[in-house]
Length: 117
Image (cartoon, rainbow, N blue to C red; front, side, top):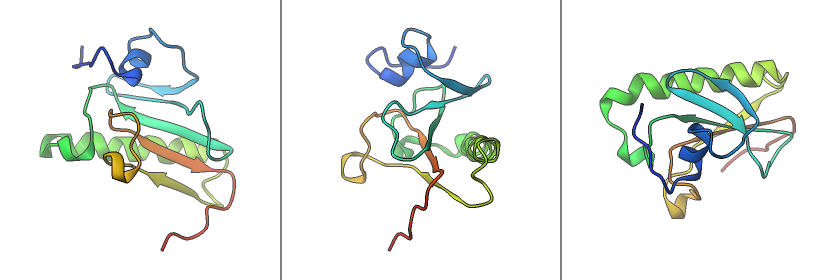
């Protein structure tokens, strides 16, 4: 079993102690709907292993991160938002907007996101 943090809400979801609306799961990745959605489609894609932030990634996780992006792409396609567009966001640390310190990728779609910058 991957490393988990007993105080992490996402680790609680992965362990089945906290319910979620899970849309995808395999041995390394889980994806579920955000409980406070910022768009009609708002899914979180995360590794099952507890990795706190992008800053804690090692080169050995490059394949895992690539697979997370592919899962996000497939979920967007399945939700019917891929053609019109969607946004992938990873917040890093407090100033970057990270609230839960378990690496996760936000998949947002179903409305116009507007340009950044």
